[in-house]
Length: 215
Length: 324
Image 1 (tube, each protein chain N blue to C red):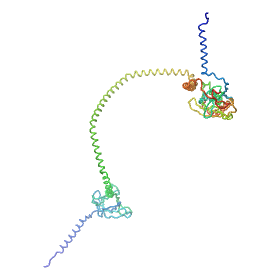
Image 2 (image 1 turned 90 degrees about the vertical axis):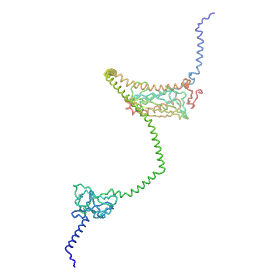
Image 3 (image 1 turned 120 degrees about the vertical axis):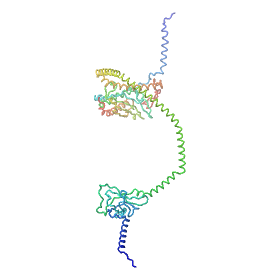
Image 4 (image 1 turned 60 degrees about the vertical axis):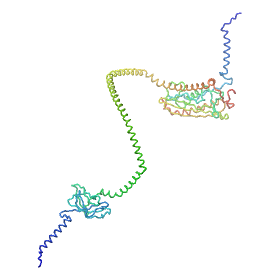
């Protein structure tokens, strides 16, 4: 009896089997995620937007923040004793912390200083100054018990005028907020309070420099 | 027989003898009966040793008077007042100066008057002066005599120093020095032969330099001629080039004028944008560099991530990845 199978079909089955074996072999190498509970994802937003505007006479372009090593990424950075660092389990940012901080500062500093700040997407807009941002601390510091937890933020601002590349000012602002409660919600709320405090202080520092950044 | 003496003859003889005696005395005393004299006072500072009464007063080397008296000055005992008598025709004026001089080294002193212009006012006594006072001047010779003792002492010291200088050791050293000098001069004399050779070489070099200078002159002359001939052509070429450059600049200028708005926009907007883009690229490059370093050091860790503990809020401790 003559078989009616074509030569192609004769090779297809072994090839399919070999591909399945190879894919199974890659399991230990490529992580496809664990089976544990899903992470809680949080954003960082400045909600008190009064005029995200400010005077058009002075425009400052806010650069992408430069993060100290270990602070970038989606994970929430944790500082333990003896300068040990790790990340918070089960909690992560909705985007890279660099983008979150920049967007928060654009709104926060812009509304408190009265100067129009531009961030991502406004790269081709003529501005009087650019403001460099260096994030030295953006971390959760757990205490011995839940009531001792806190959030530390330290950001350095460098204001440079475009016309002559002259350094208009340089300021480092720190903020430390106690975490009221436990869990990711309380921690992120403390991050927002701390970032708001930094924004208000940065706005007060930036406001008198409006004339230096006028167009 | 009684001697008959001629009293008239004896008397005449005696009178003649006495007259001759008086004349002789006058001649001996050198009394110049016709001469007229004027008395002066001279005040000398310090000693007038060697000066005596009757010492001679000279004017221009001519004896014109003598010293009448020597006393201490009444007003100042450190001065000596000398009263001299000088012939009236001697021109003693207010500018005349009296100086104490010595004849050779005998110590005999005399007074020398000098100076005074012929038309200067004649010296007369002032109201409080007994006689006119001639101003005095210290004699250089007297200064030498006064300092002579010091000179002798210094000479004795000098002789002592010379004796030390001429000690046996120094003489030995000088002898060695002379020997060395002799050797040095000998070597120099030997070296003069080489010097002669060197001078001959220098002379030859100078000759060659002279020849070279002459050739350079010829070259410069040729260059000058060449420049004169080619200068006009060069100027023409330069002029043409300048005209071309001017035309080019005019075209560029017109092009810029026509696109002034675009150029301004580029400068105002695009340049800052480029600047920001460069900054972003710098950050990106830095991140890529870090990633490459991680891949080089540990490729699997770079691809699959690092194994690290996470902080568990509930347990309030770090938990390894495998122990969750």
